[in-house]
Amino acid sequence: MEQFDQSLEAFMDNVGWLAPFLFVLLHLIRPLLFLPVIAVCIAGGYLFGFFEGALLSFIGLTLMSWISYVLVHKFPKFQDKMARLKDKIFPDRTLSVAQVMILRIMPFVHFHLLSLYLIEMTKSLKEYMIISALGLIAPAVLYTAFGQSISEFPWYITLSMFLLLAAIFSFIEKWHNSRPQSD
Image 1 (cartoon, rainbow, N blue to C red):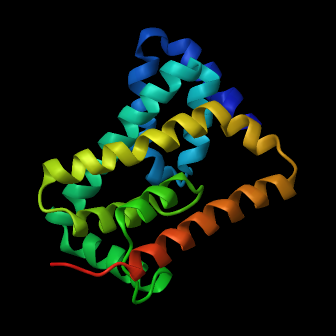
Image 2 (tube, one colour; image 1 turned 135 degrees about the vertical axis):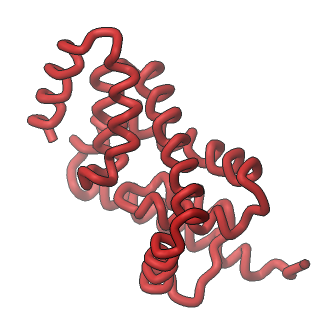
């Protein structure tokens, strides 16, 4: 991770005013490079500082959400692949918007899979983008601000944070399933 940050910092220093644009582009090509969202957001905080890094990460993640929507609607094979992944990871389960928001905060949860859940819950691109963008504020801010600190915590604190998020996710699921469903 440190080597990635150093390489990225040297590259960004050499590109000058194009650095913010290239950083947003990095968010868009991140899935092709198999980079986790958290790594890119941490790099954004390191390279641009908290405010600009969080803003650029939010822009990049929001654009990635739009690309997810386009991929699902234009490429049936992509949608089928995500649906199979959904059935494998969350078999016979429907998630609420709040649960998807919690999962978006958790590192290493598949971005496009969560986007598929939101796409299935919404009726239009506009509704999807609003809900998706709201759900991206927390990860962009948290990963940018605290990403470096979280990665330096001892393993037991990191595990405790993950377990806390899992407990919140479970609580929301139980609450969501106990409510009367209305159509």
